[in-house]
Image 1 (cartoon, rainbow, N blue to C red):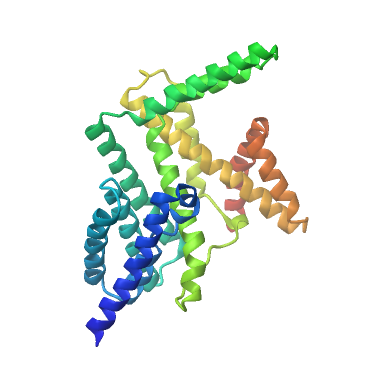
Image 2 (image 1 turned 90 degrees about the vertical axis):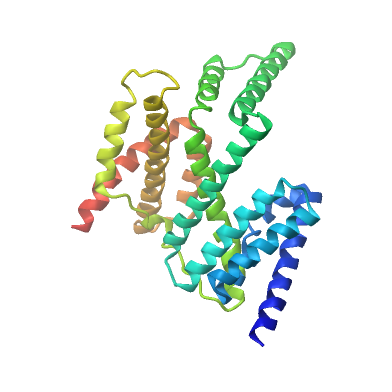
Length: 308
């Protein structure tokens, strides 16, 4: 009876995965949403069955992918299935949402690195250089278009964009990490409500305003910021490591800054629209990010004092 149920439910979930896979293949614009729903069949399966049985489902899913789509989709199926099973397993163990997010971020990151390396080695395509070259071409096209129309453009902004594009190949590891985090977050955001509808328990995040970085983080940020000003060989290991750590820490401090704005808006009983508008303005206006960064650094100390 159990084996019949296992085969039936496995077949239904694989059929669901196959439909989503075909939709992504032949209706590309649907991938904007479906990409983050792909682990869902594996999450549901691993909530009901053991790891051993879940691994068997992965093998069948990989074979099915070979039959119905291109060979290149094998890596995608392997990524979605392992992430899905990891999330389902942790949900079954009633782990916190933060733990699940960290695990799925790590798994997505590993798979993204793996795909990047395979594409580079097998097809001799350097993705970061290709993207940088394409972006530079678009920038030059835009400048020429402005010149032809007789419209002036801000040289300072163009110079900033050019400098940023030069850094792009160096920041590949941290960009991959942030991409992994974004995929993990959106996977939880879209799959957990469906999992709850199927009568499974899912943990909840604390409100964003309660996001806190430890006091030691402030010292780490200070040390990395100082080290980033020391001269080092561009594209060398030390330079790459410092730039990537600095980039990730920078984003975390900015996140802390926005969390502090949400927190103080909450205790002052301001409209929820106020911090949301500040968040949108901060993302759109580059100059405001400096103030958010300062708020983030100051709030680390304030929040840690409040705990004592």
